[in-house]
Image (cartoon, rainbow, N blue to C red; front, side, top):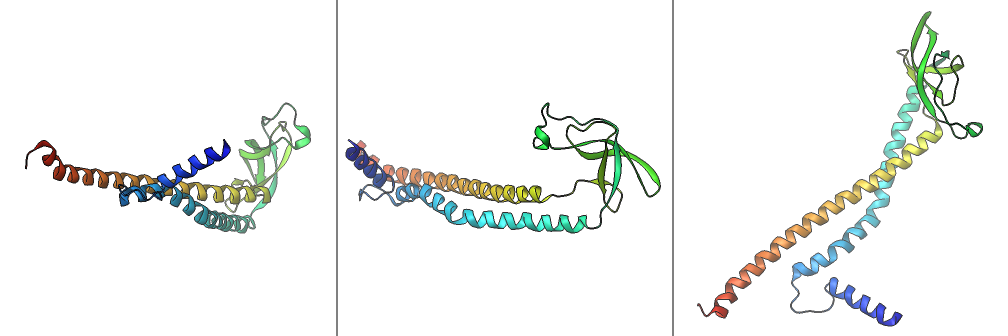
Length: 199
């Protein structure tokens, strides 16, 4: 039974790709049959290139971010409100950064604003806040966040490539359909009068 199924599948694949030597099959039919395999092959070949370029783009942005962070300085800040967090923090493993109200002193002046703090932190807790040259609170880029950005950029580059290839395949399929319709119409105009007896 498996041999019959595999033979039927092979026959169907040959027919779809135009390899069955059918004399009625037009060139546009063969091109349409090869569109999907060609797009998949292009994705397999160009996907790693897109992922590499996307990852390198993210790495360049990470390097720029780390370069900018070298001019930052940190000050202690007191949280004015508690940050939301999980019911069971799991020793800090299940936590994230949240922007919450705090006050700090910088340049001899008291400031109040939003600062990043770990989730499930109580009001009144002293946290370290990084300030840029303009004195604005910033969240430093960590190695884990940078790695995630690289992976995300690589994945998005591959997804964008897949979308572009899919759009090109749809456009090519539409153009082939129009060409086939025009060919069928021309064939009918030449054969139709002979069938109807009008010459």
